[in-house]
Image (cartoon, rainbow, N blue to C red; front, top):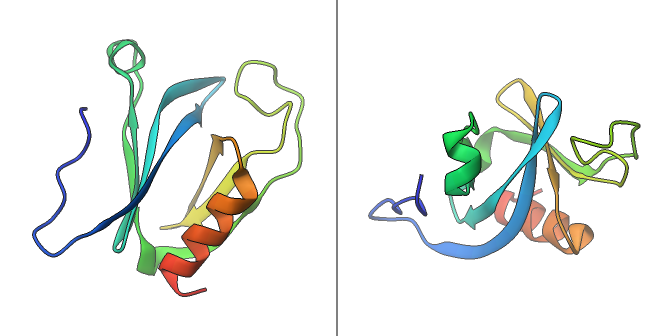
Length: 111
């Protein structure tokens, strides 16, 4: 998926490089923050090898934080990851400047 098309009444706030933890591995791509949703879209190679896009409406987000480190060297969990809880799921993203992204997402979501 190329950069997602914004909705007619939607405004982009920021785009971050990110790896999304999907199963046992981390997929490269970008995390797009808008005034309505958060969208992950993978790079072409990762998309071609099974990488999936993900999105969540800001109104559905119940929590945003930096997670504790884990033990899997392939899904990015050896370092703290951005954790977004919403729509009944939890998603993890390896990002730089994670606490700034947490703050920006919380502000956009009104938390």
